[in-house]
Amino acid sequence: MTNRILGLHHITAIAGNAQRNFDFYTRVLGLRMVKKTVNFDDPGTYHFYYGNEVGTPGTILTFFPWEGVTPGYAGTGMATEIGYAVPEGSLEFWKERFSQYKVQLGETGERFGELYLPFQDPDGLQLSLTVPKAGDNRKAWTTTAVTEQAATKGFHSITLTLKSIKGTVAVLTEIFGYKLLEQEGNRYRFVTDAVSNAAIVDIIEDPAGKIGQVAGGTNHHVAFRVADDNILMEFREKIAKRGFNITPKIDRNYFFSLYFREPGGVLFEIASDNPGFAADEPVAELGTHLKLPPQYESMREDIEKQLPVLQ
Image (tube, rainbow, N blue to C red; front, side, top):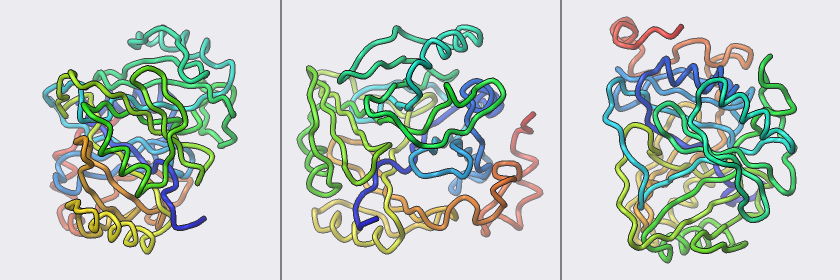
């Protein structure tokens, strides 16, 4: 690996009911809960991490499940669709499964020569399953119901919807090392050759679009991946030199982070691979214990009383 952006690290969204969120992503979609912790800024709220067996960057979708949260809506200035990669021939399985569980889904379509199936989670978050043209050799997390023939491999892409793409494109291409691959109408596909998967950012330009509202059922931020926290700080310097207001390095226990808001309004994060999700529990037990950051460990009893009990 080099000192480059290595595609997507994780994506964080906002949910309502914690049990409903857990049931959908682990039982319907078949992801693994790899970490059950709390929001570092609001320890009375869970922070769930779903992904593959070890929580490989590029597979991790995270949620803040705020009970009773006001519904938001997708629009300009935000990430509006999360794309997962699935095996060839699996979309019929997913149509039947989503129908069985009464999941809101759209019609199968094609983008840039790839078949995709759009759907929504119980909070209205917009997602899609895509069969990548080049395939995807990542090892999926599987369950009895969602086998290797259909299981998600991790992220295929993230879609941003913006009033103007110019400033965002400059960040992606001049700082992050992405290149424009193709354009279909007002959808632009950017890719990085630093990694084979989780390497796509689609941008929809919609000058007249309504500004989105970040709340329940919407994306909070998009995190891009670097190999370690030394490279993270190299990117901090590059971004600061461009005049962006970027945070200091923040220790998130499982990775180190920087945050800044890109010109189109989307909150971007850069996150490191180190130390990983096995830093505080064995791989076999990932997601089975409530893990608290050190500053909240003394408050464990009170925090556990506040959090909904997951069945």
